[in-house]
Length: 295
Length: 194
Image (cartoon, rainbow over all chains, first blue to last red; front, side):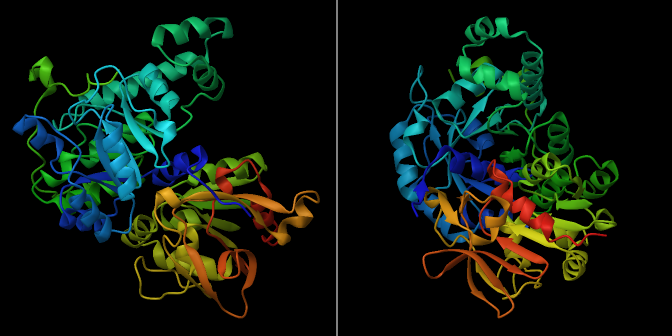
């Protein structure tokens, strides 16, 4: 019997196991433990949460491998880590460390202003951000095995997450009812591989799992994204920049399971302490918008 | 026939699609009352720590245990972990099946794999193909089984990857991620006819 590793089914398969779950940003092993105890289905190991990256400025890079390894030693759930857009050597290093998923992320400073990583070359799966269907299908074409809508990380303002989820899901619905003769021009216009456009036209969904990210700070935010139709959520600064991270983390996990039950959502939203201090996206200067990064 | 699928977290939609394609009525189970009037239950893959925690927090854990003592239940991956004997390790087990199971036993995600697995018990469902296309994702291993447990598939001499004990079925891989519905049909055969 031959055992084949690194197949697309295996890469995409892990994302399927994460569905209906919450992936939490953690910056220390202690955070990772709190996230796992709260019911996170995976953690994202990084040095600074997006809110701090935003506040500190400067170049944001892949985290110190030492930190990532400590977090991998601490928890039994999957550990993800971020590399810069286009920085395939950071990705090689993360793969060598044995992380379970790589996020080629706009939250870090891009290393390449024209190209993303060719992700099919890796055994480790990748998740990538998108704002629209064209961007999602370009990333899948490059080998991403999971997609997340970008939102605007580190703001605690869910408006961009909603915009991006509505855009992607709306474009899919529109594509589904298009006559076939319009698909090639549509593929050209959105800059997406024709075969993937054809596939989405037939199936009515992305070929990989699609999470929401960027600005989710409360159980209600998470449930909102789930009701809009995503498969799960990433929560970055929203947990560990809040008053009571353990409690808020557990509540957001529950809200993603019971996203359609307002009575349960009401119960779990009680007494969570201070949410993260948000930054309204409409007040941010254009050069501070992370979601614009990606080609 | 109505089959429940535990829908706290994980790949429950994939199981639901498989069953619907086989013409079976399904019910997503998130709370104890969803277990009423079910003929069987699938506990899907996902993160076992997450699923166990949510089951405990919403008062479902003991009801799942009771359900599994009386009805057919199939656990895939995380679900197989939950069915296993309680060995005091994390996450807490339902302690209904006489198997010991070790999490992430093949390594991390880069070690996840596909393999054509020999499963003799599926032979009657498709005469021509003796193997099953198994997908292992950060998979656990069944490392010990009690006397009443039938081993359905293994890798090498020591790695048990599918087992059955009466009305309970455990697979550490994911038939719901394939287009092959034989394991789902095998489970449906375990449901007593009314």
